[in-house]
Image (cartoon, rainbow, N blue to C red; front, side, top):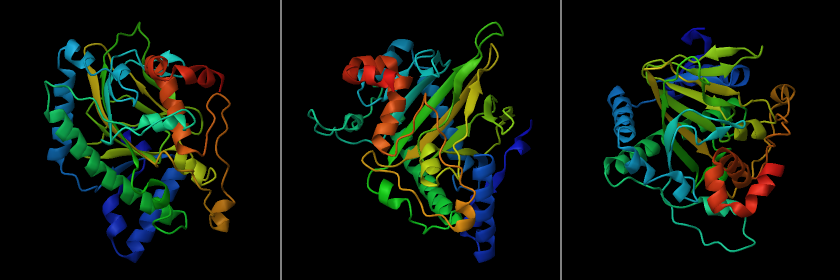
Length: 340
């Protein structure tokens, strides 16, 4: 399928006149409910900044492997740092991508037995000594896309018949800002094509910047896959499980995957996941009657239960995706996670 398979929304319409804003909110609600994915244009970030963050990511991945391993995620109880291809797990199978994870720079929370396990998630990032630009560049990018994400959250709230600040009580002060730069090396046809396995995202929403190499696919209602082909200058945005929970399933987080590129090629993406504070509980919004009648309830997957406690839900996903970090820093929880 072509890029036209996913809706295209221009964020500038949200700041237009009353009629234009209302039409944008209608389009946003339909796109988020029927597909769960859309292209976002008019976001305000110039092409030069998009190119710069991609170039910075490539500089990191070009570092010698020992330098990348020096900031390996296994050294961080906060799930920050570098992961080699094949070391992250999705649906029980290894993903063929190397990546670097960063979050908001916050101090470690004091911890003692009896506190929720998710309190261990907060802490500093790991940064490579040989590329100091990575810290300044990624944190600046994170700040910029957080602003776009919050504008979208306000639009989502209005599209559901809520006050614009309906979600603010659960993200204000310390939203979960998770940034990931990702490189998918090529694989030949005889190898497993899983770049990243089929999954949903756990936060409010995801903003993804792609290079020119395709591979992202979105599950359609018929069970087939829609190619989210790269669109220059646009983000791919998708609904996360927090919006699904808050809307009682009116909005649905959509399953998606990445197919690894062919041998001799690679794929680069910059993903930002905006979530709520770890100490928050996701509310159940009181939707207008016409929308409430269409709410399907949040998806129920016994292999991946959804929790309204934000920190618990986020930590569950991290432990399953990174078993090496779990074994080193969360050994007391690993058996509980396997049994969940």
